[in-house]
Image (cartoon, rainbow over all chains, first blue to last red; front, side):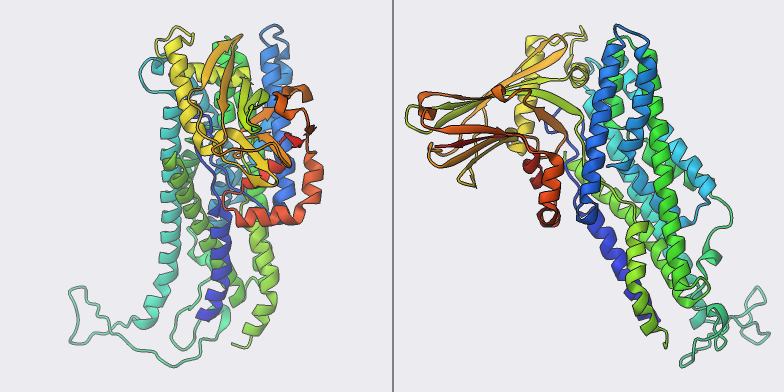
Length: 346
Length: 220
C-alpha cells in the first residue's frame, strides 16, 4: 500500500519540479523596471504559449496606442477599457504566479468553486490596486528619495514570493500532519482501563502492538486494528472555509503588481490621464480574474475526474486524491521558492 | 494487493490528468518596445570593426524610466541623470550580451562590453546609442549573420524597414546580404521537434528566441 502511494507521489513530485525548474530572470534586461519572472514551457504546450504570447503582445501594443490617443481624443477611453480587459485575459493565460498559486491552492484544499472565484477576483483586483498605489507613491513620494520605483516593485515582489513559499509550506505541513494522525493511532490504540496505571484524568493508555494483519474492510477501515489506514481526503478537509487562509492566498498573489499595469499607470500619470489609467488597470484586473478562475476551475475539474477514474470510494481514489493534494501544496511551495530565488538574484 | 496491477494500468491516464491539473505557467512577453537601427562597420583589415546600435524606446516604457531616474523631481532627465541611466543599462545588458548575436559560419562570436551607452530623451522617447566590438577578429569570409534580440523576450527590438540594417565599409563590397524576418508560425511548425528539445535542454528556455529574431545574413 505504501509503495502504491509512493508510485503515485513520485510522478506528481517530478511534474511539480519540472514545471518550475526553468524560471527566467526577475530583472528587466535593461536594468530599469522589473520583469515578471516567468517560467519556460515546452513540450506539446510550447506552440500554444507562443500563440498566447503573440496575442497579449498585440493587445498590449494596441492598449498603449489607445492610451497615447487619449491625450488628444478622450473618447478613446472606451476602446482603451476593452483592450485592457482583453490584455488581462490573455496576460493571465501566459506567465505569472497568480494562477499557479490559486489553482494549486484550490487543488490542495478542495475550496468550493464559488469561493475560488471570489479568491481569484479579489487577488486580481488587489494586484490592480497595488499597481495604482505603487505608481502614485512613486510619483508623489519616491522621486528624489533615492528609492526608485523599480526597487519598490522588487521589494514587493520578494515579499509576495516569500509569502507564496510560506503559504505552500504551511499547506504541505498541514496536509502531511492530517495524514499522519491515523498512523499514530495504529501503533497505539486507545484503551480505557480502570487499572492501577490510572492517570490524573482517570484515563490510562495502553499500547497494543498490532503486527501482522490484513488491512481490509469498507472504505479503508481496518477491521483488525479498528482504524482507517487511508482516510478519505474529504474526512481530513476542514469543514469550514478558512477565511484567514484565503486572505493569505489573496495577499500573497496580489502584492506583486503586474509590470504591464505599472507601465500603463506611469504613462497615464505623467500625461494627466488619471481616469484612463485607473480604469485601464481595473479592466486588466477583471480580465485577469476571469482567466485565473477558468484555469483554477479546469484544474479542480481535472482532479475530480482523476479521482473518479481511480474510483471515488476506492483505496486508489483516496491515494490519488491525497497525492494530488500533496502535489498541489508542494507546487505552491516550489513556485514560491523558485520565484523567490529568481527575484533575489536580480 | 490484488489491485496494484490494476492501478498500474490506470497510471498513464492518471498521469495525463495530473499534468492537466497542474497549473501551467509560461513565457515572458515584451513590455518594452524599441525601434532599432544597426550599422555593421567593416574595418580596413578585412574584419568586422564594430556594430553601431540606435534604439528608440516606446513612450510608455520611457515614462516609467523617467519616474525612476528623475532624482531632482523636475520631470526631466538631466545630463547626470541620463548618464546614470546609461551606466545602469550598460551593467544590466551585460548579462544579455547586449542583445547582440554574431555568427561566423554558424559559430557564435562573442562581443566586448561597450565603453559607454549614450541615452537621451526626445519627444518623451528614450534614445539609446552604443557600439560593440567583437572579442576576437571576425573576418569577412564565409557566411555571417547579425541579429539584435532580447533572449529574455522582455524587450521587443524591431527594425521598421530592411534599410535599418546597414552594411558600412569597403570590405563588404564583395559580399551579398539579405534581411531575414522569420515568420513565427513558420518557425514553430518547422521546429516543433527541436523547439521542444531546446526547451528541455536549456533550463532558461530562452535560446530558441533567436529563431524568431530579425537578422542580417551576409555571404562573402
